[in-house]
Length: 286
Ligand code: FE
Figure 1 (cartoon, helix red, strand yellow):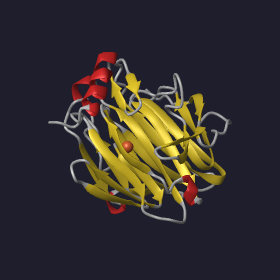
Figure 2 (cartoon, helix red, strand yellow):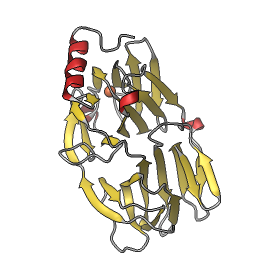
Figure 3 (cartoon, protein in one colour):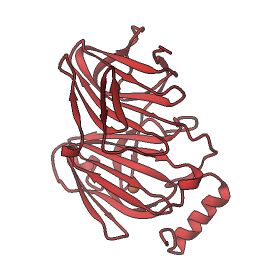
Figure 4 (tube, helix red, strand yellow):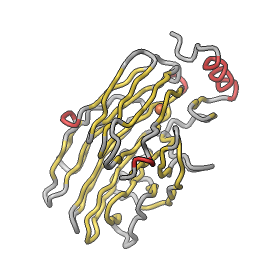
């Protein structure tokens, strides 16, 4: 098979706010039909105005999925009900598996300057939704950076960079969703090819510059989820200002989804249980 993925459709980001009033752009998860199995939601936050981020995300629950927070610029502190604490600084990632339940806060630790990053929600299959909560703080030094021949670079956060004879594993692997999470920076005119498993869903989220896919003259929209068609690879070619984008892919779970805010389960009855467990203080009970 030698089949390049193409642009299938765009999910534009909507301006919204969440937590205690953090302004963000939400593409995946912004409305009906905007998920990309196994991905539930993608938020981008980017501001130099503390009023847009300072209130953070005070204590709140999650059940049934994973959250991945990638900080490009700034400093956030995570605290959870288990007493865990973690500092997320520029270039770092927190990969949290809510599983059965977690109650945590995500609060900015800066009062000025730029705060920029992403939070991605990845669904869990039914058989993993009630597993114990856990998380990993991944320091920038643990994220491999692959330098491309024409000067670009790719950070490998999850899954494997696979490009021709190059294969580099990121710090997160072994998930049943086989999530791929790359941060790709390309100088003007440079290209990048990534092999992708046929049948897995894939998308790019362009947040700087311009980029197009091999075989098309159409530039991808910035700050939008570009959903790709199926194929065994995707090749990106940067425009005259270069480009920076996330490339995400994963194995679809293909199960029913019932979501109520921060609870994502398979049935309405399981959501009712989650709400009851939360109200009675048993969300996180072993
Ligand atoms: Fe959270």
